[in-house]
Amino acid sequence: MILETFPVGPLQCNCTILADEETREAIVIDPGDEISRIHRRLTALGLILKQILITHAHIDHIGGALQLKSLTGAPIYLNENDLPLLKIMAEQAAWVGVPTPETAPPDEALTDGRVVGVPNYPAHVIHTPGHTQGSICLHFEPLKMVLAGDTLFAGSIGRTDLPGGNTDQILDSIHTRLLTLPEDTRVVPGHGPTTSIGYERRSNPFL
Ligand SMILES: [Zn+2]
Figure (cartoon, helix red, strand yellow):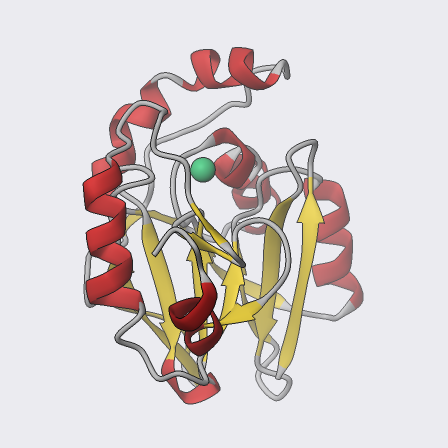
């Protein structure tokens, strides 16, 4: 397996490349920015991109998705409850003070329970609304790993003061959908360092 997570763009969104070393098939999660760097890495590793998976439609996570799609032909996956956020991309760009990226409707829907990923490294989609209405986490059960987007961070939780945010809902999503995963599940958040479900269950002050 190839697994690389690195921060991209001014808001340092964690972008992840996951690939099967044998088949060279890859997925990219949250290519928010620095697409030429991500594309160079895929090329250097000799990978074939199969899916572009977006945890939610905030600009720092989705900003480069269409550019990566045009370079690779890979389809974009997004939960349909975040479509309203795509429509206000210019507003989102103004919040951050960056040019408005070109966007397009997703090719595929990241609906709850759907299985995505490459054949040897599947992930279940967990719909976790609260940070945004279409926020999802990706649970790679055999890898004991969850990509949590901006729902759960090391020692913190996602902000809920932006359009589509809801504090009761994010707490409910975390308690019922994430903290119920095995203790030793590694959590790769949308920003900042990696943690684990057990560690956050015991010590996260927001929970
Ligand atoms: Zn966000």
